[in-house]
Amino acid sequence: MTQENLVVCTKCGVVNRLPPNRNSAEAQCGKCGARLFSGVPQDIDAANFDRQIGRGSLPVLVDVWAPWCGPCKMMAPAYEAAAKALEPHIRLVKLNSDKEQAVATRLGIRGIPTMILFHRQQEIARISGAMSTGQIVNWVRGHLPTGTS
Image (cartoon, rainbow, N blue to C red; front, side, top):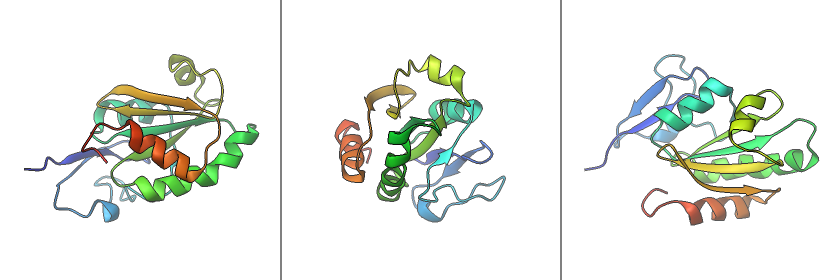
């Protein structure tokens, strides 16, 4: 029996239950109506970050970036393309380290872009530096426990 997924809305932060027989790609938030998986990683604030990691059941890939960072800007299209390849099995979000300095400090961010992969409330992998779409997808799939992607 497949268990339902808990998916946190990137817009309003509400936890949504998705039954295994439901088409996750078309799912909408029960509170605000936003699509839960748009293929476009959303920038989230500290509260939404904590909810994504603490309440959602999907693996979460966080891209820590800043608006002034050249490599971050270069990687943005690749990260978006990776979201299209990995969703709805993995949540991809972005965290602006300038706006969310406390979270970046808590995560021990030393350089950007840095991607951190979380699963079951634990960090399972981290990498710094710009990557291509294929590199991102392969890196994520290579670090997930068997049966999660």
